[in-house]
Length: 454
Image (cartoon, rainbow, N blue to C red; front, side, top):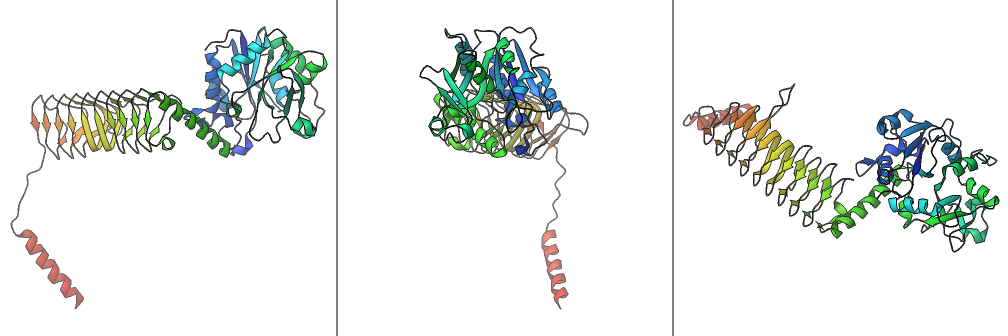
């Protein structure tokens, strides 16, 4: 979706994230293979903001490197509260005349529809100075409360510790996410003080200041509390991952995908599945995987950066690494690994095989224990296997090498030269037979062992 209004997004990400106990910046910890900050920015980008500013502090270098110019950054140093953090973005938004949406890098799941609803509410007939995103958790606990009338006009914002019993009974809580017109936002922030126990400047104070001026402020509610889940610890990160995975499982089953044991399947943020895909228990999708209709992913398989064609079968216990392509009706079985390799239509590698930097033609059969020897210690080399070729078990194809269409490589061969179409290549040492040798060996060893015991 694209926003119908011009707006800028300010994302607060200056906190130290000490509860993570990590050298990685808190907002760069991944959920479903994607940093939580990128989950949020992807939603913002879909609305096409005119500007994006990420407020940084601790771990500034990490954030700027991860952003790679996708957003402006400004420094909050020292960190003196959320209101102070937003103020740091004022210079970056110089000349911006539209709305401002304030978000948090560690609250990655705010929906685009919710952001748009906040911007739209700013321009309703009563023209509120500030719009707050509220939510109603199962356990309101110590969250700040939003006291509002039936039309969503805010009467008061109050911290839990300062709330009366009646106010604490209110279930509508403050998520911290806010929207205001740019000029209003920074005018109000200049009037925020720090007369509190922490000596900090709180963003929430702009609501009470606007109210004291006789202006209107409004609240809209998140569809579900999970939308404004904040992530501050490893336990909360795991809970967010579980939440995201639950939602994706429900999504894909609604789209016609069969999950035989949904709770054991893990998706990436960009997994693409067609209807009538079947996924068995204990399957993991890394980034960059697409699976076409009718494909079957069997248990304990791991896929990353791979494309699985219509009707193809993967696993069980298969691994598809980046660059793996399985064409229509192809098959890889247990303990087969593919990397930067294409398995042609109807081709098979049933078990115990490594295909790296390889191109396998339609209808080819790759026997058990076959490996493409693609790396010489310095460079990668390609193996090309023609249509309907048959590669016998325990063969080593030493790249660069080409096996022709309808060719046969005999079991146990080490092939280092090209094989022509329809040819047989057998590379084996001469088999030597010595009649009776084994019997004589056993007799001698038994006598020697018996003598050693005396």
